[in-house]
Amino acid sequence: MNLEQVNLHLNAYKESNQILDAAKYLIRNFDLEHENFAGFAFRDELKNDGLLLTAEGEIGEKQIVKIPRNLFDFDIKLVLNMVAHEMLHVRQKDPNSLVEDKNEREFQAYYEMLFHKVFPQIPELSPFYIKQFGGKALEYYKRMGEGSELQQKYAEQKKEVEELISVQP
Image 1: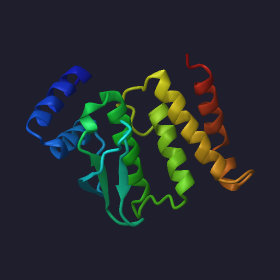
Image 2: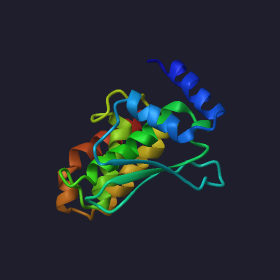
Image 3: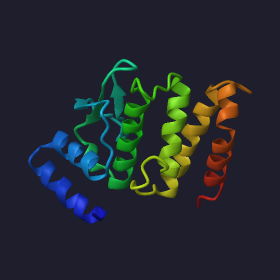
Image 4: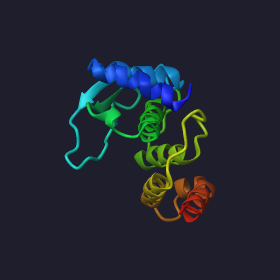
């Protein structure tokens, strides 16, 4: 299904004020579902036109992804990448595939937004967002601790991120 068709469906959901159903439509149609996902709920919108989604719940328990009501006012590629980011957190917090360190979880999720290894069906971001989310990935890499085991584990991915950012217009 192309993004134009997806937008038509999302607009129909928006007109009926069925935002949570629209989000469910996305995870079904882009194969993002996971057994550790408990559903969507609303969170407050950001005042500065920013977009924030969160996966909430205790580590090892089912996760609720909180979305703002204005989620579908943003570019569909950005929305899909942000939803995929949170759905990766849902998987990371599953007892069968637990990633305990927050910096590692965030690095993995931002890396996924850039390279789409887990969710290859998610569209590529614009150069602006590649730089922005690449910077976030590097920030979480830095927080892992200079020379730490985690940094060593992700050294190659860090290089990939740096290289990707460097070639963006």
